[in-house]
Length: 106
Length: 120
Image (cartoon, rainbow over all chains, first blue to last red; front, side):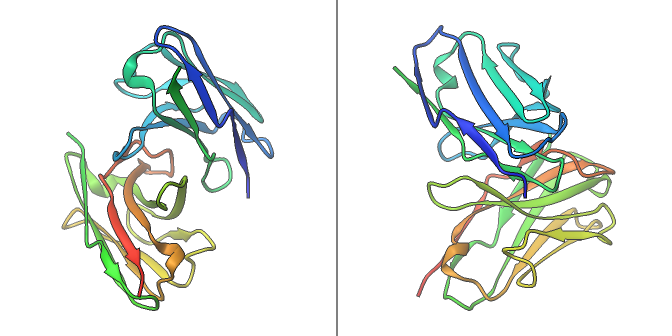
């Protein structure tokens, strides 16, 4: 099983700041990595697929990068609605998710 | 617009059974792989199973293999998950999710979830 480790577990920032979330895979997943946003009481929403492609309707402030084992989700300028939980997920070998990063208001 | 609506959740005793359903609309259901994914209270996400467009191919994660069965009815635009021999650690919100057109891919649309509680 491919294990995805997200860091940090919690990130404290202010609106308008830049957020950088990391996801490391236990073995190469090529570019088969996605990022999801989950707000309390809601289902996850696909943000980024294949490491760097924004899903339909996702604002340009969200971007993804990386390949192999190291990936990054960047939110260029945080909006109030961005403070929630983010998960990475790989589909290189079945499907596994990271444990999540909580983005909280500083 | 794409809609996925789960139903069938509830309280069940350990060892019991429950069947979840997912009604799909707003897209050509028979063209898409579909999955079930769960999230235990306060925890992360766990993919459980997917089914091919025709239903002929199914895969399961080890934790539910032999206990859960995924199926679909393309004529009714419906996905199901039959859950048997339920345990306390099966307590979770269960989501159905669209999983790629003609081939397995990412989870681009999700239902709102159905809560399953396994407790005596």
